[in-house]
Amino acid sequence: MFENKYIQQRIEKADKLRELGYNPYSNDSKKDTTITKFNNVNSDVHNLEDKRAENRHYIVAGRIKFYRNMGKASFLKIEDESGLLQIYVARDNLPEGFYNEIKKLIEVGDIIEVSGYPFVTQKGELSLHVNELKILTKAISPLPEKYHGIQDKELRYRQRYLDLIMNSEVRKTFHTRSKVISLTRRFFEDKGFLEVETPMMHPIAGGANAKPFTTHHNALGVDRYLRIAPELYLKRCIVGGFEAVFEINRNFRNEGMDATHNPEFTSIEFYWAYKTYRDLINITKEYFEYLFEHLELPTTLPYGDIEINFEDFTEIGLVESLTTIGGVPAESCKDIDSIYAYLKEQNVQVKPNLNLGQLQGELFDEYVEEKLINPTFITDYPVEISPLARRSDDNHEVTERFELFMAGKEIANAFSELNDPLDQLSRFEGQMDAKDAGDDEAHEMDADFVNALSYGMAPTAGQGIGIDRLVMMLTNQHSIRDVLLFPAMKPMHTEIDLHADTE
Image (tube, rainbow, N blue to C red; front, top):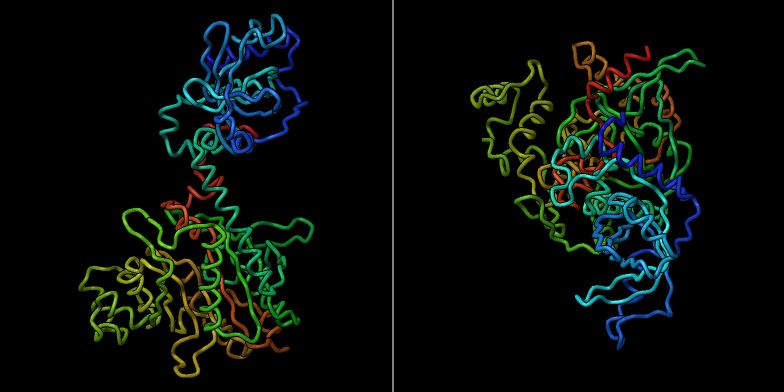
């Protein structure tokens, strides 16, 4: 594994450090400040007459990103999570003999700790004048060349640790992701929601139409399904008497992968008793306002070649959008035969024997979705593609449901929940008929959930928001893999071979 000659040279340097009495993997750091704090606290050094503050003492630590040895002195730049700092190391400021011993044994990639005082160089750069230096970690693998970084995107995803070392912008993306999750939790807690935890392994694959991952529970002797969605368990909590619950959850869907889909993803789902989907539209707008305020982001953000105006929320019914946004002739949306004829004329292939709601969904996917740039609530979804949503009192062919789209991507799905147990049972039976007809994504029958509804669930509204896609929008990332620290990847041959050796 470590046959590379450059790695061997670094291993030899680590051995040499040990011979000299220096532990190349010591664990006695005394770091007392971050680089950003050092820079902020010492911003006044520029104004001092001699441009130094020898009465101030700091201990900082970080990875060497630049090293220039000039004989009796060296300039280095070290980086911690917060930023980059130049340090000046001179032979005469260190214990006798130390500099000459160490200068050829440290290099870019090593993690060191230095202590000293702030000063400003002749070029005007705030730096640390080093009085003491300690090696904390000897890196035996060399970093990629500084100016080109990691060009191979596959390598960036497979070795995310290396990507994070080399690219501070990548680290910034994941800082934003962490803040979004933290702010999301705080927002809903401040609104009176209770955070709960529901099972990750389900006896029935449910909560959404998707293919599950299957595992086996040895102690119980039964198969289990990794969670597709927490919906049915969260609604059981509402049945039990909680009136506002949420879960920031990891979900798993054994389906295709592309720029916006990963088999493992994060979302928040929340359920709110005595509310309707109209209330969810309002709280969603409040949620985005809260995020932008606390992330200190402008309300218009670039996303590739377009801009998203997060103050411009609009709303339109699904069937109406087919014509007004998608440009599909109204007469081509009204019945099954008309839609099939139109799609055939447009050379769009779809499955045979789809019902009207499914076909309208196909038209939406093909002609409308990618045109929804600013935040748009698409409402009034057909009953046939909304097995868990409540029917509209005004039109029993549609449900009280919306999906929120931006930059041509779905971000959220919400509806007034179906709480009629007989209607729910009928819809599950319809899903089972679809499964028998070959739809392997149809919803399974969940008799216990129907039983729960039979005890009475308060009128409730529920919503899911995709955290991964939301972070993509906020950070101008166009692949979901750029907002997941460790995305799913096809194994390399070496990984496959290693696995085969263990069987």
